Image (cartoon, rainbow, N blue to C red; front, side, top):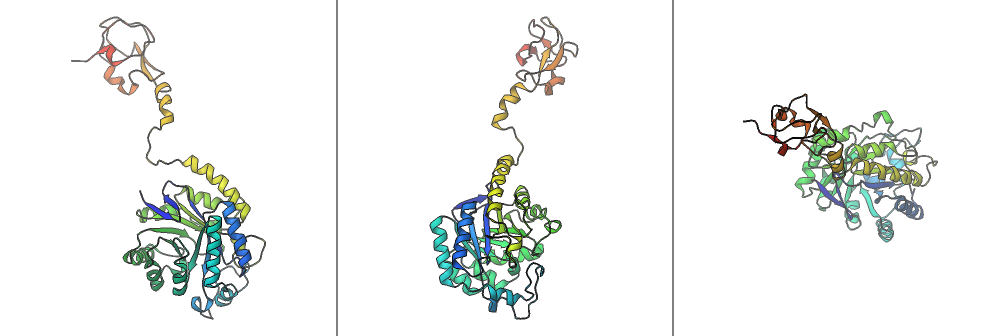
Length: 355
């Protein structure tokens, strides 16, 4: 069984999902709002509060066009948008990590440059790599050399690109990698979510756990995340905001505290419904049913000592405490060892073997 530690939690194919509240830069440069969102994420039941650590100058050139819905976020230039929200320093992230630890939630931040990798290393239990950097060989090497588990988003990538990224990460000493299905649209319309790709990733990468990073516009119970979990995603990431009515940035496709609370309630139900076994077998609670709801071969009339067993004198009835009907053909033609009355539940000791 594939297992990986994310923070203090051990995650495998049968565990409850590890939930990441992706605050990103929805704090819009305010430490107080960032702390408020960490608190709401913890109170809502998330395992981790995640940020994004970047500087516009090292992330995008000044003529980088938008790839998001400009009706929702009107800024049409990447550099200009990233410049609005890149004010947090190493000191700020250290303060947020300290606060997260104090209230009992994992602190995570996605690094977008070497400097961020270095200062985040002592603050995070594992690293998250953005879909946009799955082909960024230098950053993949830099992160993997820290020897911590990695969550790798696979938005807009091919199988060969994922394999190449894993090869780089593995070569640099990291085997614990969760692959996150993701669609790199902001927002992602439901028709483009393609959650069946989770099953495809599980098949293509059987040695890796699979997760899902969601960019759909949420409704109250987050069906995209529930469906992803049902399909096998054991790490679930969703953008998080304290106010979904705010304009721009990632607020428009984020869940809020109420969404998270409702999702956790539904998730608990689904988790118990799914169970912890994929291989079909009778479970302990079914033992009484196997015994009493199944049928046995039963006499339909009185028979005498030495009488031949035939279709005329046996029938299949409950309970299943005698000879099972699956041996019907083996019972036919045998002879009784004793006199028996109608409705007797036939046992192997009641009949002679055919010589």
